[in-house]
Image 1 (cartoon, rainbow, N blue to C red):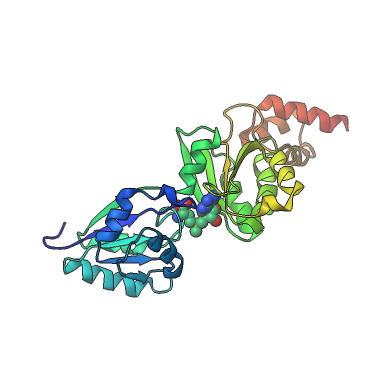
Image 2: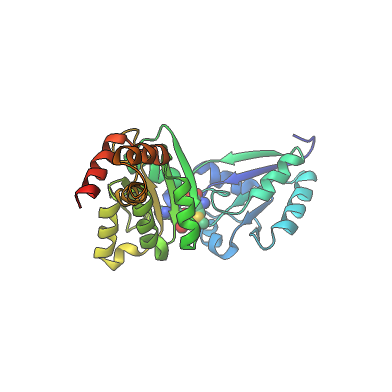
Length: 282
Ligand code: SAM
């Protein structure tokens, strides 16, 4: 830490339930010289509720460059600043990366005040392996980009965590069914810590059907968690395996096609053999 310089605190705020705001977060936000908030009007409600009267300035992607310089200058003069976002932990799909990076470059001490993050809250109740997991944030908005990203993840063995907007959720599940197979286990965690909180664990296909049953279910904020690829058993979606086998079987024997498909898809030979017999029978 630079001599005489202040500290940058990165402070988590509640996802919905104000009781999740930690006493330490309140103490720090009262004590710092300035709070940088993603949306000052949004954060005002939280700060007023906890009688935090510290001055607040906006910090978002459109004024990031200017704010980083100002903040670093203030901290250099001995002030301490806190960064908050609209909900959860700053920098987790929220602004702050440039500021934290700049603070490190200047030798400023950066202190976390930990608290809620939807990714961890959802994972903790998902009932899927938590020893190894990956956080993918939001998938690309366009279907082509989304399918490409999901394709890259088709061999991923770790539990996968995604954030998704309500209007893209059904399309996203549909693409996950075609990329991972409809039987893959997954969890929808919606409105965590809020009135309409729901956590639903089922196969991707059943989750898609569950969402389609009731329009209300598509409202709110969502985390989607998908089990990693099983080490054995059905891994490649049936349709995809059949498509590859059909192409190969046009030009080679069933046995060769199964062997090559197994290499291409990284799929169990026995399963491919059964599928190939079915294709031949047709
Ligand atoms: N910084 C936040 C965090 O720590 O989780 C994430 C901010 S990101 C802009 C907003 C996304 O987080 C939402 O679209 C949703 O995917 C997820 N999210 C935030 N609050 C949530 C909640 N209460 N329940 C479920 N998902 C939530």
